[in-house]
Image (cartoon, rainbow, N blue to C red; front, side, top):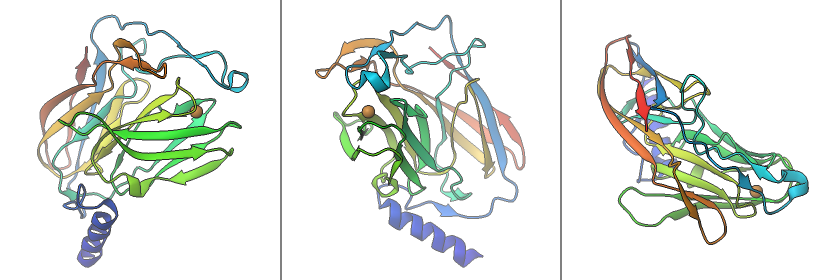
Length: 258
Ligand SMILES: [Cu+2]
């Protein structure tokens, strides 16, 4: 069992490259705890302008709602990433990611995956989409292309697992449609979650200990348009808090987004 676990960890490291996940080791977590909570918006949420469609209007429609900030009546914020930092040993990755180009939107709008865990992009539409992922590395100006995939055919699927070697938020755009945008957060362990439509999240199987937890949400204050006509929002919001996970215990950690 031990040999298998170490092997699996080594395999992950090989797939992910040295940048991330090299240190992560899969091991049983018999007394794992849980973290759960909610992300709420503080105050009345701003109303975002719909985004005009400039191509394939016959298929895509004339405009799409912005998904940069989605707040439900109970103030829960959908699509917020929650990450437990610094877990070097624990459960195996249990979430894989499939980003669909569906009705000229990316579905889901926000996803998160461990580097090395399966990630794919699909076109469910009868028009060409070109899914372009750009990694914003912390503290570094500019962004790096991590994948750029033309998907001309309906039901076409491309695996991007091996492209996701570095941790951080990947901004996913469509080079064919300026109204399309999504985020894929790549993490260095499987201890991650994205809030649901009620703003809630849950992470299980956490080795007992004291951790830093990061909440991340894309920017949503409009800052005009880029040269191609895409809406630009301000910088993502990021908050960190500490939490203690007791053996087989459940901790609650709520965040407030402003
Ligand atoms: Cu597109």
